[in-house]
Image (cartoon, rainbow, N blue to C red; front, side, top):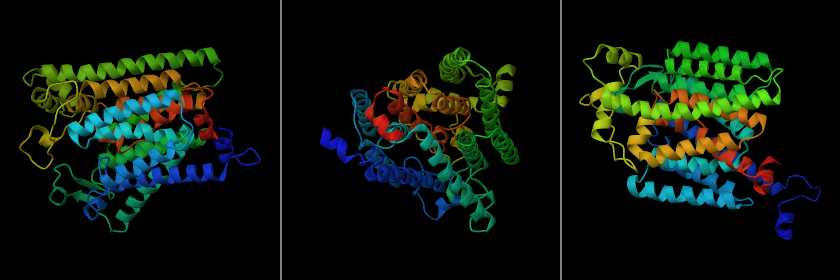
Length: 404
């Protein structure tokens, strides 16, 4: 044991060359994965099809590399239990669906164990920001389409090119996540305010209401958790209120979506008014709910967005209901439990600040958006894995190794 310890330490007691190399390689592997996701969401996908996206072979292989690099560290009992549970669930969902968004979520939780929350946010900001800037620049240079309909090229009815991306919503959500990363990364008040103003400007320019809602959520939660002259007791009380509110919001959104899908009535004036507020999603939810009711491990649902023959042209927006119908009560429960664990065991102020902002934005934007937005566009699930190893045990050697 002593020899193993010496192999990972320098003679001066600092970080070893191997640990430094592994950390850098892990960051670049994750950064490459992020770039693949951004490319897969852009018109570049027309020239290099299936290179990106949360379920592409290359993307999953890169993420598995991040998992393996993060596994080269000291293991604890709690970490072994987590990995065993995640692997068991992965095998079940591979058997049922072969490849799925939820499988990606599980792998992402494991991949996050190779980072501290701070390094994860920094890496995500640099690579996701670079990817978005690259695609937008290519559109201004005329290499990628800046605007116009593109369903005939992609086979997707909702394709509407926007600055090199396949839709304004895609770019809008990426701007939201890059803005959130940047907001957490900078320290000066004027920098944070500038980022929020710029984010609101770009979301308004794209006319992306979900993005505007996400930025407003970020502002409200930031004000709620502003430290200022508040004492530790007050901050702890606010955090507990947020934890309770987050769990209740998750449950309300899940069961509320089911209630809407089950009881929506197109002939009722009140229902129609509410349906308009939700951009006409209610009949789409009802169509999928009645066709594939909730089950333990979900249903095989084929969502075809290349036809006008389906209600909503095949779109299935609404992450809570999608995860429930597609991957079952097990999947939706795992996501809730992972969030609860992270909220309960995250202790230090900065990690809590990262967590509450990502949880708040994810919960709110998850109602109208697709599950892919929460997976391919955000480091949320990696953050949950990162917080697990960094907070599961105060004396965890693996966590100490990451912090070096």
